[in-house]
Length: 344
Ligand code: NCD
Ligand code: ZN
Image (tube, rainbow, N blue to C red; front, side, top):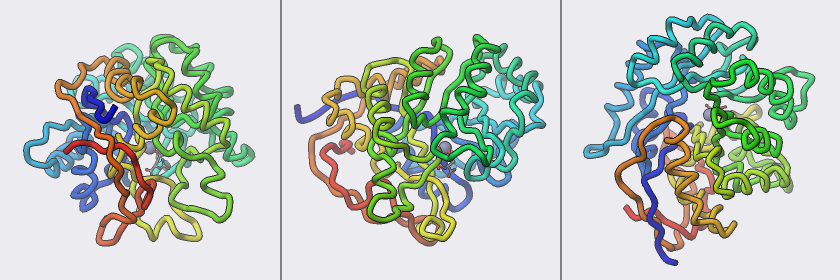
């Protein structure tokens, strides 16, 4: 098999940043994809419909000529989000989800929610209008080890949340553990998960053994190899509960190679190919289309993209660095060789 043709995929979790960054991140995000769920963790964050509309216009201004890629906007939940804002978002026609960041969990999350119990009216409103809740599923308490934060979040918060709002659509974003995969696969059809390429390709040894590799530092942090394998199994199983979400999150080389480096991996230089590599290695290329192109739209209640993409079996070397914000970034898998390439 030397080519694969699949329905055009979508990216259900990505970060484009703002201003000058959009000139590089937007064209990269359109490469191979039909739509992208745009994370709202700007500084200040996208907390209302007006800010989301303005951000969407800035994004569309950078979309390459002839592209019909669509940014699907997201509201950033805070302690002050009102049910009225949820209704306005639902009526806007361009907002497809609301993101829950526990305050302090990750990049630009200082305005995030301090207590899930304060969100009752908002979650009720989301459930009633069918708005998707996208969860950064980690606890932030200092006494909880960073490698346990996702599993503890599921036990302490997610199980009761799912029980309390039985028809609220919830995406456990960027799952990184066996516990995350098991929880989502066993839950009802209103619960799904996105999976990144970095959590499928790497485990914490790649990041920490034989020297620290800051370009593999992302949140939730890479876990041990048994968790990586559980994610590969979930993604390639054909389960409709899991879908592609790169969490592509650019930071400059300098802010990552630092005494206190930023979390996030950029993957839009080769996103679909990085996933194809994982599926090929698992002998599951026939499951790539469900994961990349149909499970996500089915979950969000959206139509599939009309066009297809072709991947060709062809070796190519990923760039060592890419220009970004007057300087550069180091992309995921920099300098490595892949075996599949998007026909462009
Ligand atoms: C993301 C970022 O840089 O915006 N970083 C990351 O490590 N994933 C934030 C996030 O999605 O948690
Ligand atoms: Zn993210």
